[in-house]
Amino acid sequence: MEHREFLVQRMDFFCNSREFGELDFATPVKVGLRHADYLAGHGLSRQLCLDELARLNYETLTRLEEADCGLHDRRGRFPFDQSDLARSNLSGKPVIDQVLVDALKDMNFQPAARWPDGRKAAVCLTHDVDLFDGTSFKVLRQASWWFKLALFCMRGKVQHYRDTHERITRWRALDYDPVYAFDQWMELEDEHGVRSTFFFLALDRALSLEGRRYSYKDPRVRTVIRRLHENGWEVGLHAAYYGHLNSEYLIRQKHNLENILGSEVQGCRHHYLRVVFPRSWELYAKAGFRYSSNMGWSGGNNGFRAGTCIPYPVPLLDDRLGQLWEVPFQLMDSPRIDQPSRYVEQFEEFMRRVKQVGGCLVLDFHQEYLDPVENPGVQQTYREILKRITEDDEVWVAPIGEVVQHLETIIR
Ligand SMILES: [Zn+2]
Image (cartoon, rainbow, N blue to C red):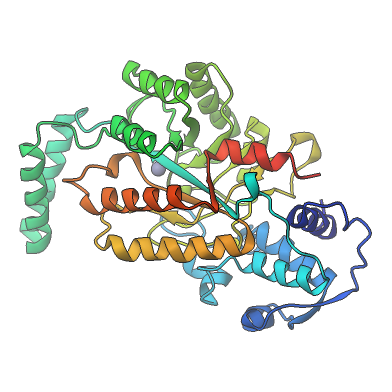
């Protein structure tokens, strides 16, 4: 699909209409003043023609700047600080959506409600399951603690030594496993009447290059996956970090999960977000996934990686591969949320911006960070966010798979 066709599809989608089929791409449109600098960075002015807008939209959403750029961080990913939007200080805004809404208004079109019951925005709660429990590999875990203590001692890193020592003491005093939190997640979300998406690894071995993880063959893992699925939670694949561009391996991981579930796995998010756009999308489509949810940043850089919070069918794919949606995510937790109120403030700010353009806010909270003793800030923050989204009549909360299913009914 080329850039013009993609813009027509997106405008139809924004307005829930079929009115843009005959667009004249020389038509000038004017967009708001607030993005003048951003547009200038692309050699454009606030007065641009539809063809220029189509190109900007296409290039940003397909991450042209990331494709074959040769830049990567220590985990082999495109670096946040090399992103055009981050360098323009705009990564906290759905810039492309805002520009498109401005252009539509200039053309006398009003974006239509696209969420059930006329709600202004959708919210998807997601959990990457990097660890299943804290009791497996006890000896290895303890050995790594002592090794760390010895290292900090030798290097004179007093604070690091104290923190690690405190952590060990805390863990030893607990009479439960602070890593395994599936029951608490289910209870907490059930209390609020919401369901989320859990992305599970599907590794052959629990101990491998991937670290101390878990295997899909573990009967305890299989039981939890089935329980989640049977009770309305969505299970997606958290694809392995190593072999991230190996198509057969990706298909095998998907099948491993599907064999447990007895149904298809729709979504994929790579561990550490190790994706290469657009190549990873091709692999996802080839493996038969319906959506990818990788368009976000990790490492505390919350924001809008492609300048959008509106899920979109990826336009680059070979038609024979079928349709694949990208569902961008904006907010990720970290093991330490020292200031829950500041995190909630950022959530509120993103929520406001997402509502303005009728988008979908996607949050990622890791399975293993919920323990109130180990990570008190995380549980407090998640509870507060749950309270706010479930009390908000303007928001529809659903697992990503349901959101994609809904959007498929309104796109041509
Ligand atoms: Zn992960």
